[in-house]
Amino acid sequence: MKLKQRFMVQNISILLSAIIITGSLGLLYNYSYKLLKESHVYRDMGQTPIIVMERDNIVYNSEDLTMLKVKEILMNVSIENSYFEYEGNRYKIKVENFMKDGMDYKIIIVNRVIDISYYYKSLTFFLFIIFFIVFFAGSMLVQKRNMKNIINPIIDLTREMENLRTGELEGAITDSGWGEIRELGTAIEELRLQLKNSIHYQQKIDDNRKFLISSISHDLKTPVTSIRGYIDGILDGIADTKEKKEYYLLKAIEKTKMINTMIEDLLLYSKLDLNQMVFKKEKVSISEYIKGCILDHKENFLKENKTIISENRLTTESFVMIDIEKFNRVVQNIMDNAKKSIEADTGQLRLILRETCTSVITEFKDNGRGISKEDLPHVFERFYRLDTARGIEGSSGLGLAIAEQIVKGLGGRIWIISEESKGASVMISLKKVRKEEVVV
Image (tube, rainbow, N blue to C red):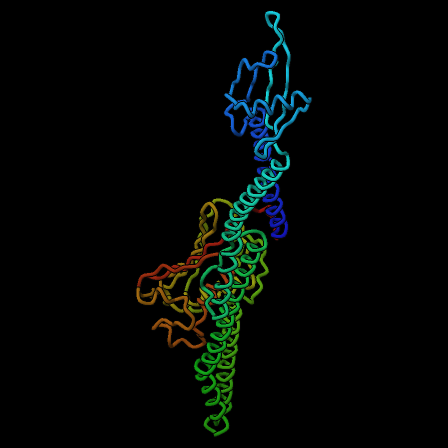
């Protein structure tokens, strides 16, 4: 219910409650007044005075009225006046005749006449007091509820907005209160989250900018120096034969390709880290995909006299949702690292497929040098290179960091199990989908 409607309902409720309660008590007052009137209470007499007369003699006087009052009453009866006044009050005289034992008797009954104007004045005053009390009590009750559900939430929102103004973005803003107050609290909380995310995103942009500048100035310095050295060697005549010139030029081209790869890795990681990379997922058979990966890399392994083996432990054909182009980059980075880690002749990389109820796990298991306990927690950090790989040319130190970002972007998980000198296993878990499931 909107606040405007709520206030209207509150005011109407208070007014109706005051009217109903005042009316009920007014009826009770009127009923009590009628009972009082019918009791014929005489101001100076405890009960209604009754006088029984035989001719001119008083036979019975119920209230022991003074003779003066009796004579005044009889005088009014004699002149057929039904009323008389006494000490500012008016009384009605009622006479009834009856016979007993042949004798004539008169019964004179005296009733006080109530002043109707006094009744209405007292009733009006009574109703006004009751209405004021009920209206005041209802207003206090409603004000207490409004204080809890409107005033206090507004005070809290004002304080929290002041915190936002000063840069305090950690505390959650409550959405207490009624109607628009609750909606306002929810809107401010959404604004706080958006502002916090915006600041966090800006910080990430700044970090990535610093990171790119640092990377370009540090990691690209060595290959650029090498390229310049080879070109200077040609220009200075150090490469004095055609074969040397060709060798120097091939080395310069190789270093150029290395720089290109490093720049691509830097830009790719930056986009992934800022969530600016769009994933075009499609459903693929994981076993068929791994077969294709082995065919693509088998020749490179054979050139270095190293082997690559596939081991399928899936009970049925399983499908996963991946961006093939980007996932190829993950597989490329993992397999290149494994190839560099294993030895010639005895080096072996096994690609093992297995499954759980909800996911497919791809394991890249090698029998290489392995990873020490000190290095294992840091392998997915950007620019972290193992001591054994620091001298490898063309390594940007971002391979596994990029792989982790891509796998997370695909809704999967990646981790490494390894012991030094006992090889390493890179595990990728992806959610399993049904063959007939519609791709969205």
